[in-house]
Amino acid sequence: MNRKELNPESSPQAAFGARLRELREAQGWTQQVMADKVTYASSHMSAVETGRKLPTLRLSRRLDRIFGTSGMEESFERKWREMKQGSLLEGFPQFIGYEGRAAEVRLYEVGVMPGLLQTQAYAEALAQSAVKRGAISPEQADERVSLIAERQTVLQRQPPPLVFVVLDEGCLRRPIGSPKVMDAQLARLVEFADLHNTVLQVATFDMGVRRPFNLPITLLTMPDRSLMSYAESAQQGHLERESTSVLPLLTAYHQLQGATRESLQLSKCRKTKEKVLHFGSVSKIRSRAPMRCW
Image 1: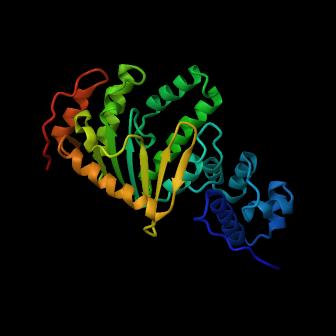
Image 2: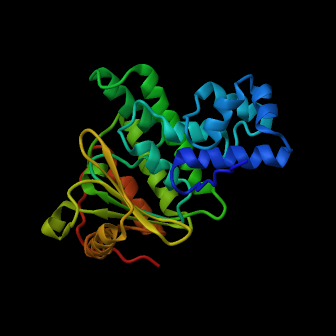
Image 3: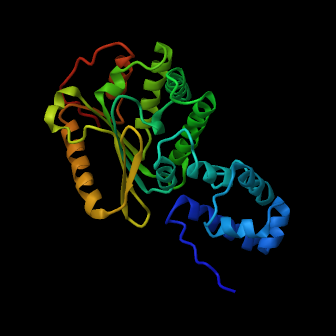
């Protein structure tokens, strides 16, 4: 009998199938035995395991039940959400599958806080604004908020990834939700900056042409040191894995980090924390001088 080899790094769909095969074989089950336990046809389960058919949420939850993986980081329901998020831009579900396994994450954000740093209240305010515009349904808004919470668990992963974040000044100036929501969000930035595996910086408006990016971008370094980038347009996301395309972006990101040191930097010192907390949702950024922290 021919056995199809699976490459879990090729796509979230392949990772789902590889994980399914791993757990099934660990139990000593045939595909028929597993199929009987979840009340699906053996041919259907074979297609899911080899990546020829997408799993459903119902199947994912049944698999979590028989394998005892419900609520775990590697649960099948979580892997399903990585693959299929109807309220998200095309390309984004594939990106978050890689984000969860990355050794290093570098991101630059414009206008709003990045998902990895958002509080639940901030995420809910953004999602509800999209509902009011008619862009998404209330159900899709709930999916967005839940997915953000799931993505943030990567920060507690062991070993945790190194996470470098540069925020455009507009992320701090733009009020989202109530002043209370913004106060809590700014406090979250302080907590994030205080982690041992993070660097958080702000690219102030007066950087001018020294800012190499005009749109948000994320760069991932995988455990095998391969690189990929993710960027969004209005309608879709684009995941780039060709090193010839990603390396210039990595160089530009390093230039961005260097330029922000001449403006405003958030790092692990009390002086900087106090500066962040003074931003508030309506107050001005008064200092443009470099800040030194020890």
